[in-house]
Amino acid sequence: MLNDLLNKYESCKDLLIVRNLTMILIGFAGFLRYDELSSLKAREISLSDDYLKIFICNSKTDKHRQGNEILKGTGIACPVTMFKRYIALANIELDSSYFIFRPVFRSKGLAKLIYQNKKLSYTAARQNIVSLLKSVNGNLKLGLHSLRSGGATQAARARVNERCIRRHGGWKSDISKDGYVSDSLENRLLVSQSLRL
Image (cartoon, rainbow, N blue to C red; front, top):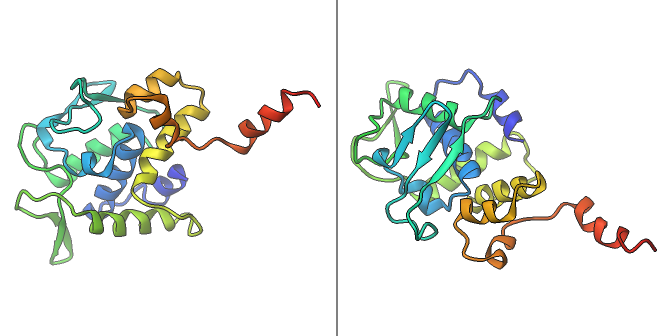
């Protein structure tokens, strides 16, 4: 679904769309809660050649303040590439104390981030992000928490080490993490298949 979404908006230069795509990809790849995503400030993100490092000062899930890394991908849905595209389009300085994801206004047909240092509200983000996701699959029942859950589920289905998934998402226990991971039908059927009945 993310590839379909990125293919649809591959050449889009509208800041509102690019901001929303960036939020989707960073939230999904970083297993971030909406509050963490919306509270990200420019100085809490650093870029290297191979990955994006996120250090959230007031994270509920990163008690040891280790931060989170998101690897640069090779496909169209690469969160690092989209983040670079977004900060270039929005003229964001990574050493500033401004929120990365601020509300957007339009002036003479051009979208710009508001000048005030105000984070994007949950309601506005939900409306923008859910409608964007539904533009490629209208039948989904989604919320902003779907990004965190979807990323964790995708990692689990790819057989990423459970401990690494738990650390990446900041879950204290496997029980907490497992509440976010949806098992595929194929994996659920493996249980009864292993009984060899």
